[in-house]
Amino acid sequence: MADSPAVRIPLDPEEQPILDKLLAVRTKLELLKQDRSTYVKSQDVVDLYDEVIEQVEPLNVIRATHAKRLEQNRVDTVLDDCFQLISLAYMTIGRNHEAPAVYSFVSTTKRLLDHLKEATFYSPKDLESIGARLQDCRRYLERGKEAYSPHLLTLLSTRLDVCQKVLAELELNLSHLTPDLSPKYDKLVSILRSLSACNTRSKFPNDEVDDYLEQLKEIHEELRPYGIAAYESTGTKEEKIAEMAEKLQISIDHPEPAPEAKKLIETLLQRNFIWVVTMKTKQGRIAPAFKDTYDKLLDIRNKLDKLALTQAWSLRETDLWNFQRQLDRVDESRVDGNFLDALGRPAELYEQRTLLYLLRKSYATIYHLIVSSEPVSEALLPIYNQLTTLRKCLLEVKKLGGVSSPRELYPYSMKLNSIDNMRVDGKFMVGNEIPDGQGSVTLLLEECFELAIDLRNDAEDSSEADKGSGSDSGGDAVPK
Image (cartoon, rainbow, N blue to C red; front, side):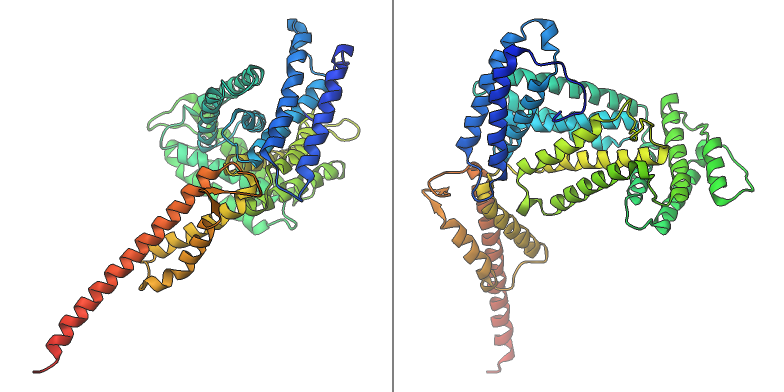
């Protein structure tokens, strides 16, 4: 990945002109993403995509032999940067469902899958989301066969295959869980992640950690019918927990699951108890040798969390590239999975797990931001966001029983009409351009109109019914 500290193979002199041109394209892409004075234009992105593809073809010719195809030098690093930026730029202009946009998703997904595999504990819901999105990506590639370079499509298809292979391995690991054990396993995964998050608070939350400990004990009790071994201890609270973890064994007898499932639950429950003991001892204190890495990852995590909260209004997808780049540097600096200090010594368990939590959480947030990115151009997002808010308001009004009078819908109708009047020949224009995402915005506008009309009709029907009821009762009340 970009600017990785990993050693690269020396550059072939024949590849120097390709590198020079790719560096020039990367500079243009960086300037494009940094320019906030105007919206990112579709044609600019497409032109830069074409420039990158022009360099891929001669590169493939130079690396025609199998040995050279396996090279990873600076050309590959810069090429990856270009494809990442192009991919995020395609999302910025609303072309989320086209082949180039798949690149960034696949790269992030591969990182996420590798980390799930390394952690060995993950939720089935994690895998379901990834599996569904990988299938979507395959459809996008199939649709783009005629429009995009076969070099790009082959590259993306191969990377999708790699992701699918890792996903299948992860799914197999969970396939042995029985329906009655799956909810308990999910809960244990959730607690383990929540405990790790506690280590990143400005003040260590002892009470919250104690609450998670009580939840672990409850799960422990729930598993007693399956035959968890009893334990005795006269030591301190932490020593009792540690002893419980060491002696924890589950001999399940009704019905007995596969040995793999038994081992999975045992190990995860044990790991949670040990993690509580370690956290209570450390109290959120990170060793000085790893404080810089911790602060850097914490800052990235916090910034990504803020972006996730304000995504609809503030996110330009190309901004994610800076975060991806920083995370990739940290991830690839690990040796055999370990974080090392300045003297090359691996981190202790507490620092290792805490740093890995921040790294994985950040990759997961980037994945979420990419998946939830709307297929609407940045130029149309202000209109799209207004309509999204209007839709939520109208649905809430309908949920609460509607309005008592059509007059109450005037503010909504006026806003919808003002947005509708912005269209020119049925299109939302920005200057002389027709930004991508017209279909999504138009569909949302029509849905808002339909909701408003339904609410007005319901109010009119209710008003007519009230008038009829009032007339009947009034006639009976007046004596003749």
